[in-house]
Image 1 (cartoon, rainbow, N blue to C red):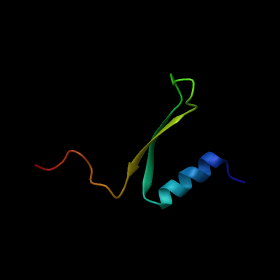
Image 2 (image 1 turned 180 degrees about the horizontal axis):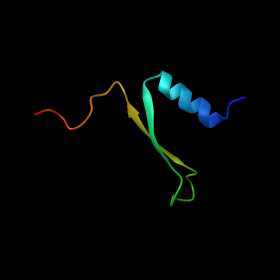
Image 3 (image 1 turned 90 degrees about the vertical axis):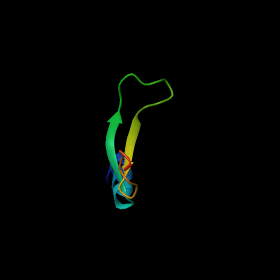
Image 4 (image 1 turned 90 degrees about the horizontal axis):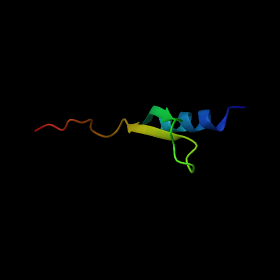
Amino acid sequence: MKPIRTKLSDHLEVNGWDVVRIEHEDLDLWAYEIWELASRWAPKAPWPS
């Protein structure tokens, strides 16, 4: 059985999201970890002029 973290990452990837990074250090008490995601469907910055 896969851990929930792996399942979540797999579902995000299938639905057009990439996990850029997962932070564990120096977080507030309410946060165990923070996931930064990037959409494969959205335009990438910098925006064209």
